[in-house]
Image (cartoon, rainbow, N blue to C red):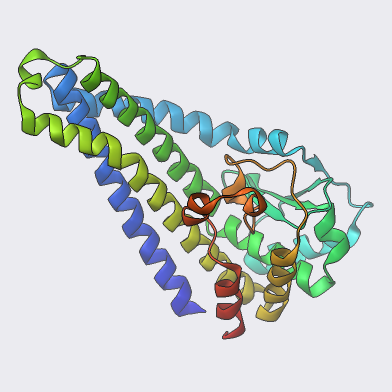
Length: 292
């Protein structure tokens, strides 16, 4: 477990570093092409990143809960769920997250919140009715690990970077196609080629990096959750049930799909969507848990 946790943390740092380099390169090329000053593009991009990130940081959890149609649970509705959350929060050494529920028979769950002090664990009614206590404990431990490991904050940052990358790429392509660049830069064929290649490939690379980071954090949460419960089979059994569930989670969409313990859009995806899935194959996750 400890080896897997260390490996996933190391891989995530590397992926975020690569992501940052790509963003900087695109911002510099855009600033150089349009204004003739690459540093201006970096400064402008930095200001936008800060503002956009702050909005997402403070309001993303509320937006996600509203989009998902989740409501806060009262302790008398599902006392055993509250007991599980409280016990696992103590084991993880973090404040007890709030419990929310989505009224849907599909099997899924996710966590949100910018830090452990503002965290929420969301489950579907299907999870509450179809999993036994050990399986439910495994799912809650997985989501508790996301909170403890600050995965939600990390994925919020990654999502922001993906959005900014797409925006910068679109501006770059429009500037090149419609002659928005400086006249002296339009004559440089090599510069134009670099700009076009970056504008086209960067969003694809960004999506791949987002997928890779998300997959690493899922593996990490599985391992950390197994450490909390000391029962990897509980989560493994839960994942097998969730994977075999054919119910469609109506409240899910592409903006929130990466948050869930398993991809809620798997029944709606085509071949290319599956290639860029933010979730590792359930069979692989279960195999790793069985070896612990």
